Image (tube, rainbow, N blue to C red; front, side, top):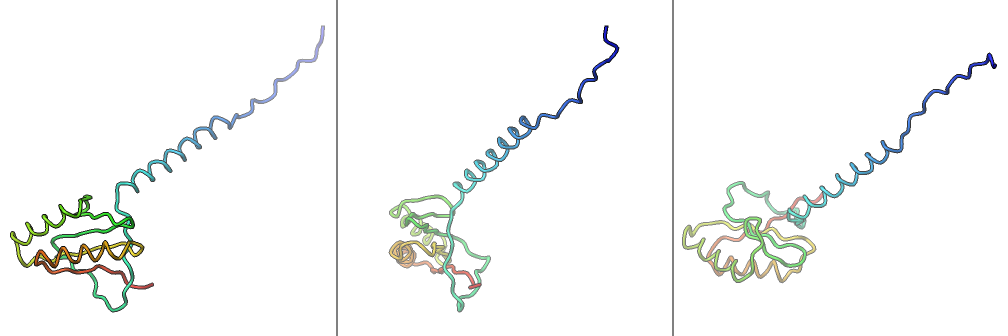
Length: 133
């Protein structure tokens, strides 16, 4: 018979499950941020030092993204439908101001088409810019 009693070592904390949970949380946050970004328009207006700051009394906002897609009040719309909507808006209220928000890397032709559609409808076009840094 042995008189020596062996003591058990203290239990180690296993950090592998903690790391697994943290990796899953990081992936979830990254993916949810990407989906939120897909729902918003990623438009960066060009800079202009002489432009006035945008007024808060605008009625209609037309957006043009990098690919030349048109947006009316944040919803994607075809160019023909945009023209019809602007004419309908001009008939409803002739003094409406239309702010055109075009991405600085967008094709110039798309922004000019939007300006032309606003002018044909008889509305007041405004092109939104941002202050240089």
